[in-house]
Length: 282
Image (tube, rainbow, N blue to C red; front, side, top):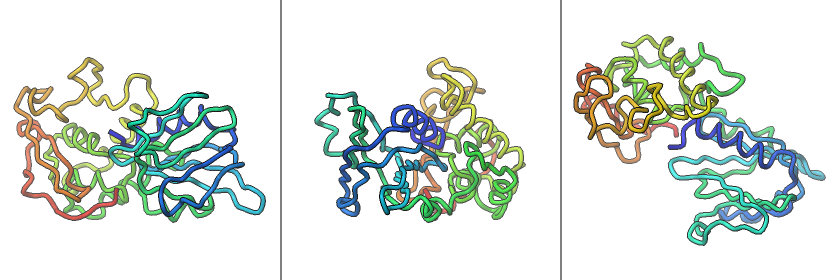
């Protein structure tokens, strides 16, 4: 599932494939950007903030440097095809952006969400609302602690999913961090040691993004079926104690109340009846 570590790894792959290359043709397949063109610009590199991907391109003639912003959400992706190759025909209706590169390869943005093209100096308009991100050079743990502690009544899982408080944690990490904290996902965040929570979250996200074969492994075990403590284990039981894992369905349209897994034995505390139903920033 695309989370902060997913997008960070994607950015590094796109850096290897596209950085330093010139765009020779662009095709934006979203109405708002249909008349825009980035042909002739050189790809400077890729940056991320939480789940947001920022592709930076050089200035061109009298036009300033620009940033292509995209959000993968649950189903977006990028793929690059070799010279003479095409993406499968079944995928073409979902292509939102095509960038032909000067070495003959073609980059395709598939099911991209929130696609924007802005002057690089205006990136803050798109990501300035986001909280500190452990995978960025400007990571500020103290600020993340401050933001997460601002509303001590907020359910833990909802606080972790709110990208305005700390960016990059998705549903997998929120569920697993609640388990490792030893409390119900709906425990008020003011009842947990937030500084320790932030440190653990940052370490796990960075490990997942940068260590080979450790991607989204939360238990330390890479054996199939043992990589998560509770997430997705409602048919297999808690990996620690074997108790039947419970699952609460998501609240439609509410990013702060996604599908939630928890072990009632290892994670005492309030149940899903304590959810705070309100939209959160994705």
